[in-house]
Amino acid sequence: MAHRLNTNKQFMVGNGILAFAVIFVVVIFIYMSMRLQREKQEERHFIETYTISLVKGFAGDSISLFVNDSLISNRTMPEEPYTVEVGRFAEQSALLIVDNQTELVSTFDLSEKGGTYRFEKEADGIKQLAR
Image (cartoon, rainbow, N blue to C red; front, side, top):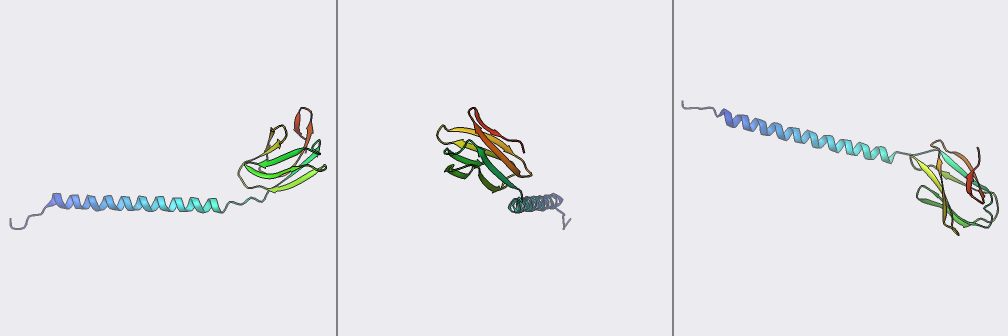
């Protein structure tokens, strides 16, 4: 028996090479999936717009308009109607109308399809008018 085969050693080396190959494939898969996910987020653009009109009861009041967490307008309304057009920039959007004197907040959901929204202020709060 001058030349003995060391089968245990060969088996362990083979398993080690296979383990490194599996780890390499998993790392490549995770890298590619993260890269594709990041590219999808960057390409997201919306073409819908929201037209917001404050038609009655807002003259002379200090009003702030927010879409989600972005300030759209913060001013004293000089006259009625006051109209502002905003492009959609998120999956779901909400309009917040804040009366700066009383700090009352009125929240309204905005459609994913965009559209025109009209609001009037009454003694009991701000109401959305029918389209």
